[in-house]
Length: 380
Image 1: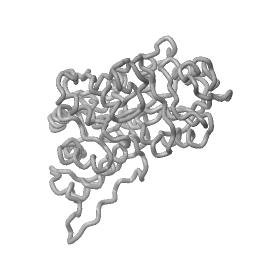
Image 2 (image 1 turned 30 degrees about the vertical axis):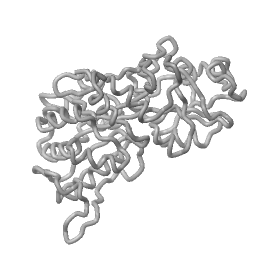
Image 3 (image 1 turned 135 degrees about the vertical axis):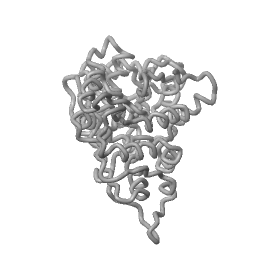
Image 4 (image 1 turned 180 degrees about the vertical axis):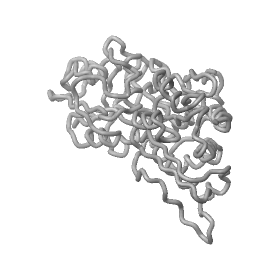
């Protein structure tokens, strides 16, 4: 199935995936999600929790992974626990790589990831998913911003090749002729570029690598599937919040992060020269134009998406990610399966998706949400 712009309805539905700059991009709060909303007279005050079907949910459910979706999960957990007495769900925002590792070691019931499982990760999951395998269920998505701090330069333009060379330590000065050509009239300093990257395994790192290897293959020859930073040089920081803080605090710095981290820190972001008529700014609206061209590449119950990183469509921001929940299609642990299904049924439901808008997230496009809702009840 292709998520194309064959008609305005489908495109706008998929575009709704990224209508907010905050999107999937905040990762504050505790890893322990046992707190429930206040209650009055023994009933929850949360209207969102009122129609949740607990469907046999009980006991504890552990999950871990992407920090990008952490606030969404926190909200879902609080509503679900308020409705389902005796249930405790704990989601740790330790990064996509850490979440997948825990999932494939059988330590968590599901993992959150900013990128779909790799083939070897699917193969490894078969040891835990007895008779089945790990599948990707998309939930939310958004733009990956290239944030920077450079006094006197507020509207920096870069292209894929230049970004690749900066992060691969091939361009090391801000007034390099390549950067200057893309930014005529800008007062670029003769200072060293301080490039930061993630120290932890990250789906955001992987998505940046996919973009660079696709849009600038001659300049980025590293493994595009790697969640670990593959290039030499640069400076490392942990998590999206770590690289965001590093950029905020370091003159001459540059890094990649989900857009809301840059927004929260009031950091400048790069506009991308994609070959379209004008450079494209990092925004949820512009990212939606790229996501609208995504294709479902997964088969069967797997809904992994293929994104067009080489898009030259007017106003389409090419560096995007989609966040997935990863679970076993078959072979889930009997003691946690009812809670897993009930929770994911809620998160993918109209009720669960509806509460995201009030939290600065975007609901799934109707077409994809319907597919997720059909798959979750079949988990076994």
